[in-house]
Image (cartoon, rainbow, N blue to C red; front, side):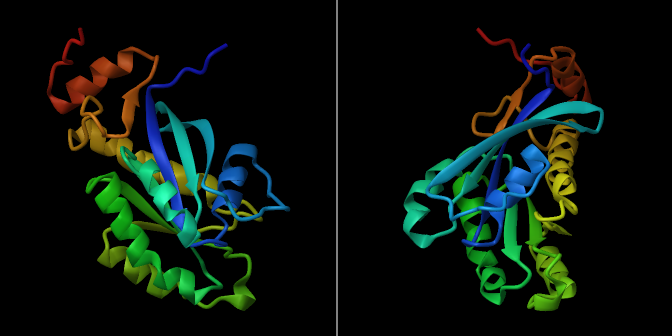
Length: 211
């Protein structure tokens, strides 16, 4: 039986190598920690349907390699992304310092309207912390990002990170700020037809007929 959902969102997981991006994706999809994780080569993919604000939303998630030598490959996947988790490792100052470059890529290559949630991963390694919650919060505020600390190992805040980002996108659709019918929005209507009409009513527009 095929999955039923109101919307499909294209998601990215971006950030420096070794920050735990693949482990976050695995924990979200499989609800368990990926013990033998190695560096992603190019791009990995996963998908999952989650409940968001009374809607069923399917997330198509592209986990991109963080190594410089793969950037020319991974940048092609940015196009048309509706949301992204921007990941750093709370135990590695260098991964935090690189965030501005990753964010600039996301906003220039995907969309200026991409919804980005900053993720401080490996919060379980408190004794090795190099980046404080406060300074990461300040970076998020200055760059108009949402922010959560997570642990891909324990699962803390992993589902919440993806769901919070998806909820922000749904809110923007319902307010009319994002239009699923716009090419490159990273959003598609799903197979639960009534949502299309309710979304149109919420934005004050009639649904365009497609020929």
